[in-house]
Image (cartoon, rainbow, N blue to C red; front, side, top):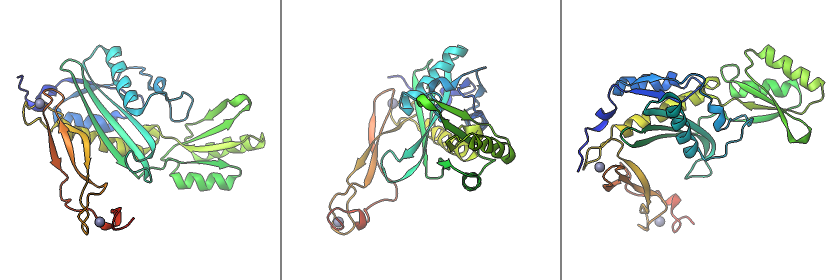
Length: 286
Ligand SMILES: [Zn+2]
Ligand SMILES: [Zn+2]
């Protein structure tokens, strides 16, 4: 069986960061510090072809397919063999649909050695929002709520025949204000949305940084058997027992980790969690 030397397989290589929204500002320092990677960003790399948050181009694939496609497109364009891409989504938590937030995926693809390693971060901290703007009070209220101008705002006008006009990249409140006055004067129906592109949204940029840290941790987790990097969770195990009645609940009790090289897998108990709170038990608190 082939033995690996953990993350050394990435040491001092060149990595392509597939972004046109300045994500390299948070991704590159972490990769450089941990693995000595040298980052390049492809010139004129158009990530909008994979869909935009503002809806000019629809996202047709799920976030994992999208982030993989971005990384592979960057490799194709640059003729390199190591790439990183990220993709965000906004909405319910993948496992707890009542929690709304931002999930960021960061993927590392190594076509030379056949690795695909994925980091994730979910946070409820997001200013993802939209609002109908009927007057200037609405605009003032919305822009304060989402943290303009540090965070960008996009204006959308619905035209006839289901088409939309989009206005973005306002540098100041005056410019935003003037555009809204003009549109309201023309009796247009104005909708304001948070700009979710990373360079227009420091809250999201922080989430991408956290997802990159998660990726670094996973890269640094080696398979106990073959020592390949990226030994990671492939499944969650439920059935944590209730603290009162001792019956299994839907609570998480551990994870199954697996190696993508030798297929070795093992179960690891969730740290510091022994029993489920009775509030979440179907028997004690139906
Ligand atoms: Zn292994
Ligand atoms: Zn119980």
